[in-house]
Length: 109
Image 1 (cartoon, rainbow, N blue to C red):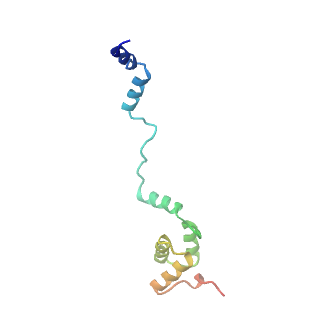
Image 2 (spheres, rainbow, N blue to C red; image 1 turned 135 degrees about the vertical axis):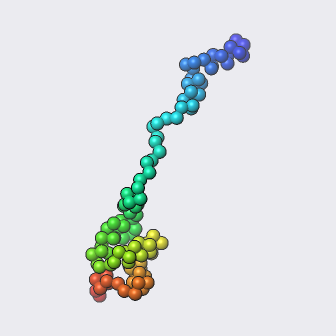
Image 3 (cartoon, rainbow, N blue to C red; image 1 turned 120 degrees about the horizontal axis):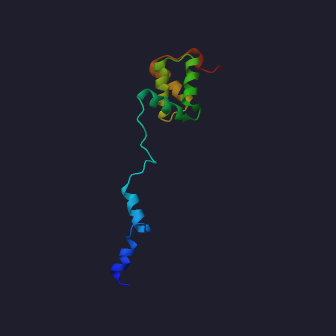
């Protein structure tokens, strides 16, 4: 067999080399780009994924609301937690920054 005939047999339609070349030309729809979500839903989903030593952020937020923390103070606690502070120290720092904290937020003892 001469070289030209060998190359022709490899590039024939239906050969493995020809099929792999054709596949690479077409874009697959198997993996679609994620859809953009609106800001409120993205924020809600992000809050569900935030896990700290004391638990998930939504559970921590509910606990702070029950203790009487204001929305502004809760957001400041969230910022402190994101920076790596433990919840007790975050609550203490927010109390110092705002100048007050709820009466029920301190442990008796």
